[in-house]
Image 1: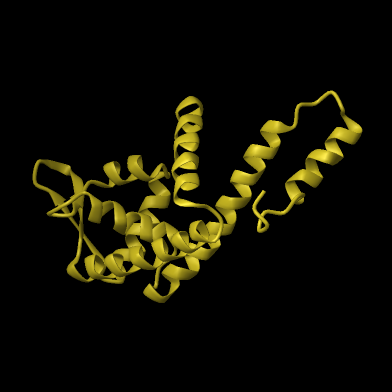
Image 2 (image 1 turned 120 degrees about the vertical axis):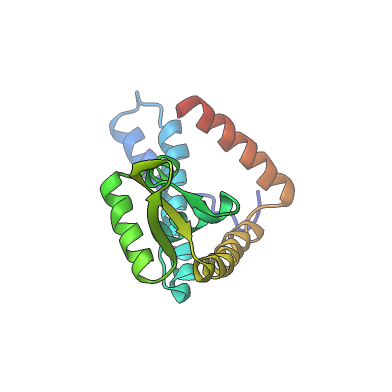
Length: 168
């Protein structure tokens, strides 16, 4: 075992408590998903802090990054954004309002659908998201480098992909 890895953590303590009062339970799933949830929350906080100097939180970053990844002309419909980010239309509208007000994107009528809109990343938004993605990745890289070898990270990626494919 790596000397950086604790022999017993908070998730183990929870599983131990359940084992004491309900020895009939298999707590392995709790141990796996409990650590995934805790890791996700911890990294969300670190990445949010990395995005803060750019005036955005994870939610705003996700919108800008989705537009950036879509390639030129960095334009999608609100429906395409909502489907990609798995949020409600109300949540998307709030994010778009904030980002448009900040000059990071524009909304315009869809030339192919008079009822629709197109959301386009502005040049300022493109520059900002390009900087922010580097800052977020640096936080994620630091977490990986502090805990896993490249081989372990690749193995974990494969295992998580496998788990996600069977649960999504």
